[in-house]
Amino acid sequence: MKHFVSMKNLSEHELLQLIKLADEISSQGLQPFSEQLFVANLFFEPSTRTKMSFTVAERRLGMDVLDFASESSSITKGESVYDTAKTFESIGASLIVIRHPETNICTQLAEKLSIPVINAGDGTGEHPTQSLLDLLTIYQEFGKFKGVKVAIVGDIKHSRVARSNAYALRTLGAEVVLSSKPDWQDDTLEYPYVSIDDAVETSDVVMLLRIQHERHTGNEQLTNQTYLEQYGLTQAREKNMKPGAIIMHPAPVNRGVEIDDRLVECNRSRIFKQMSNGVSVRMAIIKRLLEDGGIMNANSFNEREVASR
Image: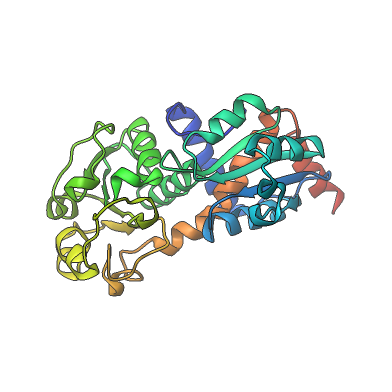
């Protein structure tokens, strides 16, 4: 695996390898790298969970983080995203993590750079690391994907999370259904749409999505309470969920909009577990990319451990 920019072309074997590695890291940890490596985090959009969990993952691996703020960079002077990324490659970064409002920008960079590129969210394209932490959460809950029904509910049309998860879950053999306000459906995703009540009552995982207000145009809004009642997870709907079914959300959560505030931390909720899994997943992805790219030998982890004894 040279880059990690999309879930669309990863095989079942590749996905399961990453999930199991992340699960192992979650329970056992991972020794830091034995040599100095630099990583560039290029975030052109606001981020809390993704950016901070990448930073924690990188520092746990012993990497030096080259942080970046677009508003104080040469982007303000007209420098292209490619030239910015190429600059970090040229000064010694071994890996680039990028979030950008332009769809497919990560794929374009991956084709031009010689170091691994990780997609931390590109426009309405994909968010593959978020997807992998969602997959890990489901795996930890059910121990499998085949026979597990997942409902992705909310602003499908504008959600990169929905797209990555739909691709990956199908590859892993899960059953995927979508539920959305009619004008927020995405017909490019060939999965069945069902009502919110059908989704809630028949699924093992109810995965809610944030309304992407910043990507909307025109008069697409509903009042918060109306949206919750018509398309969200209310307390009444939660009572109709299957025994053992769980609630997920990539966050940030609009409490009282896509989900009733009182359900965010209820017994069924795995929302904060997802966040916790984000660090292990991103450590696993970085480890695999650096090994597969020949930047880091697999033994480099153990050598540091032996040297510290």
